[in-house]
Image (cartoon, rainbow, N blue to C red; front, top):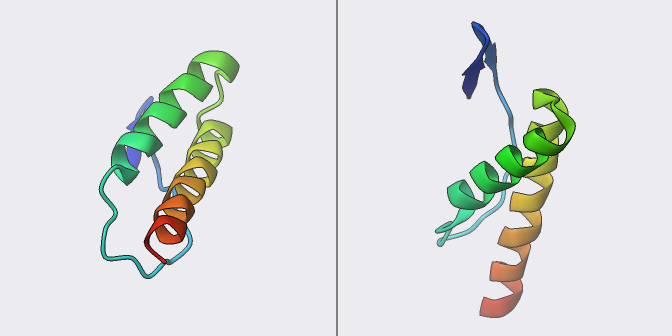
Amino acid sequence: MMYFKNKKYIFCAKKMKLKNTIGAGDTFFAALVANFIKIKNLIRSGKFAIEEVEKFLLTKIKNYE
């Protein structure tokens, strides 16, 4: 959830069963800010950030299998 220009935005990710989600928040924030600086669209940047977090978490699953 985020507030921007007095509006509330909620970005939801897919549910994943993981014990270790360390780094997911940092990944989301970094991807969101980097993409927002580039395209200046919060909603598209949020969706991009969610996709990046999902990719990041999938690599953690593959590394622990």
